[in-house]
Length: 152
Image (cartoon, rainbow, N blue to C red; front, side):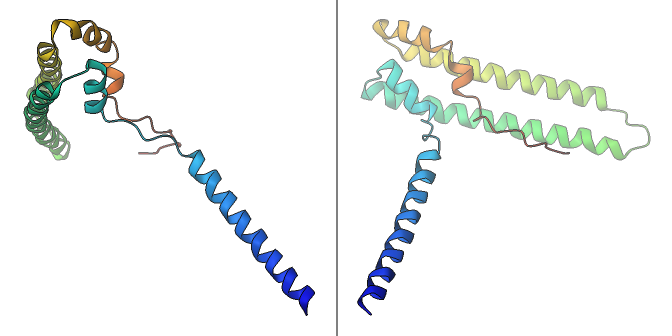
């Protein structure tokens, strides 16, 4: 009877150990959490408290402007795709032009936002900003997702 209890305890310990090891492997296999661009910019530019407050206000304005432009872009794209149901679509060129203009406005809004961030910098922070400028496109790009034979 004692040997069966010992064997039973050893089996339970082995199972618990395997579960723990599998959990550890799973935890270590996940990529590290991606820092938010806001945090990276504050850190790299060494913003003080006042600059952070001003930067947060720029972010709020930038997000609002981008949301408005993206809303306009979605609406215009929807109007374009509705023309697919028409025998002879008449206004596709003007809709494509509006999409192009809106996309241009989105990029211009991003550019002005970064220019405004540069203007927040003190003289001693400008070199750090100029260095950061080379990373901005990658910093704000969506995280890379593996392409698993997507079908449309």
